[in-house]
Amino acid sequence: MEAIEKLHSDDDECPMLHDERNSEIHVTDGVRLDDRKAVSLWYVHGSLVLAQVCWGSAAVTNKIGLGGISPVLFAFVREVFAGPILLLLAGCLEGNGRCLPPLPSVRDAVPLVLAGCAIFIDQFCSLAGVKLADSSSLSAWQPSQLVFTTVMAICLGWEGISIGKAVGITFTIIGALMLSLLNSGSSKQGVHPQIGQILFLCNCLASSLYVICTKKALRCKLPPIAVTAWSYMMAALLMLIANLIVASSDTLTRFFCDDCEEHSHFYIPEKSYPYIAYSVVVQSCVGYMAQTWGNQYADASVVSQYAAVQPIVSVSISCILLAIRVNPNNALSLPGWNMLGAPFVLVGLFIVVRSTKVAPEEPTTIHRSSATSWQD
Image (tube, rainbow, N blue to C red; front, top):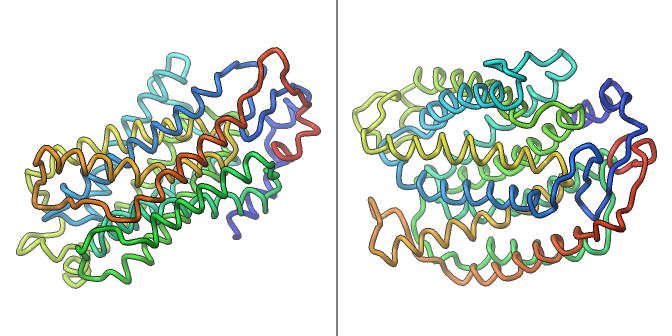
């Protein structure tokens, strides 16, 4: 909570916010569009869906590709490649002709450092949790991000609650509980399932913190790809430290990778190369860029609401692969009764999308100085 309070106390210290208090924004239920950059609501929601499709598909490929490799090393390799790629993209697309984006100011670096820590905790806990428990539990935990993010945003005074959003969130929570509590159809468990569940809780809390921290950076008008890139570089540094700690202890090495056999912590089996590449490009670059871009316009709670799509994507891809008899290492399994929660999730998202649609000829406009749910 200290990190959240720090973000809240810094709200009035962002010079970009003070310079733009008098500009107008179009406000809908959950999505705010800046006059200076007209963006379709469907682009915003589409980018958030794209992020979850990337992460849901990566949950399947990561499950297959983690065999024989430490999840801590897997995460480090992914981040050490994704970070520079994102920096180059930020320079080319947002840097006004520069190869790399400019370094953030000290004030702007605070939410970026926190966002990097959130990525580190998120990815460390998710990959280690899958290794120690099972991927079905990881997917089932994801919708809890909606609750965590909504509470954080309300505590910061960034959001209120409307009828449309409340109804949509209620349906999503009902579906999420069904996804989490009903039989998943998978009997496969890791070597430390209880520890894995704790890691999944930390994973979801960190994912919510990333949304909040990047929202703070974006409110200071930092470009979205640059926000993602600098956050990823911080996460890569932390993951390097984690790898050095794990590699220094045989006990930790075997704890996180019981199937690494006689290989060292830094061993990467050749079969994992394509899965790492997919994770770098799709999960890290495309997925995080899409979510951070959408986070410019959507409320933080709406951003996290789409996490409920991730288990649906994962299960759908697993079913397709099983239907065509593709199951490397026998890593995939059919879903169970928990998928009855999927329609509730989809209905909840549909209600939110419909409630954010407003006729372009009748926009609701307010000044930033009075938009207490957007700017303090």
